Length: 367
Image 1 (tube, helix red, strand yellow):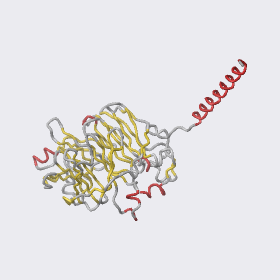
Image 2 (cartoon, helix red, strand yellow):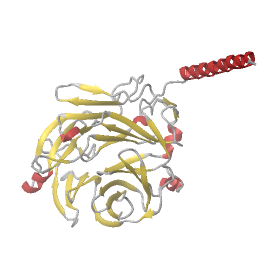
Image 3 (cartoon, rainbow, N blue to C red):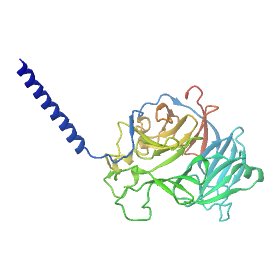
Image 4 (tube, rainbow, N blue to C red):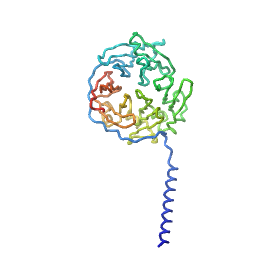
């Protein structure tokens, strides 16, 4: 009897060794992920609820972007006489036109918003980093510009890409460049760059991708990496929305951690990107609005949008918290291009392709 038990133990030990060895070999042979960020798989596609309906409140000719702060609308526009227009959010009255086209210190050859970062300085003034063409950023003192009746620029600095100022300090920059080969034919490395930089030239880079995403088309090899970055109003917490991949990536510099969320049914960075298939489905994420508690982002991959012929239907609005949890989602009543959210009054402001600003009452819809 003892011999039988002993023999069984030997057999069991042998089987266990084979299982462990098989597991070890499998893990060794498993290819390394191209995406070097801890990722949580979520299901947020086709989860939106009812259609929300807005009310038109203002036409803004030539508008390209919007920021809401302190009961002010800051509109980036294509108007050479005022590439930044400031309106009262309470009355929808124009308060001032600034950043006219030109080459002077307080003028802009081509003014635009590269990010939606806006902050207050020590005096409580509203400060807006406004891009001048692609390679210069100027800090515009919006409050002082309104008081003096002309554009007041506090500082001028070189711009390397999409830039967020940590602690609202222009000397602490987080830089995202989606294509470092923009003027270079070399395409044998990951095109995106993520780095922290200071005024002394010190840089800390982040290896987000271990290798290039497999791509059917060399012409569109940078497409999977494209996106925008947005900062929490107070914390050093930055999120990247990807334009053509269903990922959101969070950089929490206060906690020194990076993580991502991904729609589990969507193509991953370890898949093969085929521009003729995936880009034909249009965008994934576009414009976003940052509040103390939530990130609101426009979404284009749900059936609500995709099932409309010629992609002419409304898109959707998804709401996440800053831990990457999906909170809620809504179907828009029209196709929306730009958004801002007033968290105190629970009002969503949205611009459509007709350059009209709409107001949505979100009371009771977003916690």
